[in-house]
Image (cartoon, rainbow, N blue to C red; front, side, top):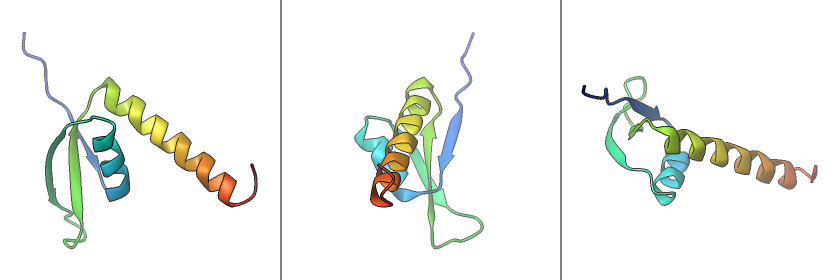
Length: 71
């Protein structure tokens, strides 16, 4: 039985770069259909990608709170 390859689009370059740094494989890039001056970064959708997205989101939220003085 063949496993269906699912893909996930990432629209923010900084998040895509963080995912690459964390070892996720970039499948391809494409132009954003709504705004062609931007790229869309496409990754294989797997458990590691989801875990890393959660990690990046939490880290960014903590950093934002710290910058705003909430500690």
